[in-house]
Image (cartoon, rainbow, N blue to C red; front, side, top):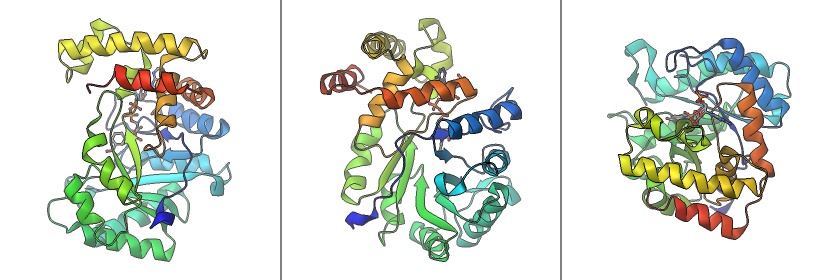
Length: 299
Ligand SMILES: NC(=O)c1ccc[n+]([C@@H]2O[C@H](COP(=O)([O-])OP(=O)(O)OC[C@H]3O[C@@H](n4cnc5c(N)ncnc54)[C@H](OP(=O)(O)O)[C@@H]3O)[C@@H](O)[C@H]2O)c1
């Protein structure tokens, strides 16, 4: 089992704001193209996309940009589960997943997908059957690794009945740490890679918000939100010792965390990609790593 862990770069790009017009207002395709180009130009060679980001538009933009780059150097991760033929209801059936991979390959203009995730669990398909279908695609070379996303621990166990799950993607950040207790012990024992989504807590952990932005982040109580803003002030001080911004320091913490296979901060603008790429240069000391860990200990 030891050889199962897939090899992926520590920093990637989240692309739900690349073409994700159905999810976010006021997105411009031209910014999406710039974001992907900037990432590849800066050596960020893992792109995390999904059918659901613009109902295929994100994949199309990535596919267009990739025509000018060396495909073999880029790790493309995409996902499907929402069925466009059935009001976007979740579908994990083998037929649907196989069709979804073929459709994604066309939009991405490539002949293989490095990581294909079941984006969300449906209620009816046995999870090991869904994964067995993906394993057929893996054997045929259409996908290289099998992922599941937004699965509970029990669903991950069911999906991994035959030891075929390579990667799990789930909500995780320094202010949303449930996965550490709920998922990580099993993933570690099974050598399954972990990819957190919302690593910057949708921008909150960049340090660009103050107390008056609490309305944007209503899932935190007044007290929690104040604690986060206070903790970010301390992160800022740590970052300054490295000439790093808050976002770079937070991303450097994930990069240093051995349980996190890759970090995929999203970006609306190319300049955010440039800034986030700077996190690769930030080497936190053990004490700084532990300090940041404890600052956000309660989440
Ligand atoms: N599997 C799933 O179900 C699932 C769910 C959600 C996301 N994802 C994936 O995970 C990726 C990451 O999540 P996310 O993008 O939603 O959230 P995130 O990474 O926590 O936050 C990204 C957002 O923060 C802001 N930002 C990023 N870098 C910044 C910087 N240097 N300075 C200032 N602001 C900055 C940008 O938004 P603004 O400029 O608009 O503030 C950006 O869109 C997604 O792109 C997607 O690929 C997967």
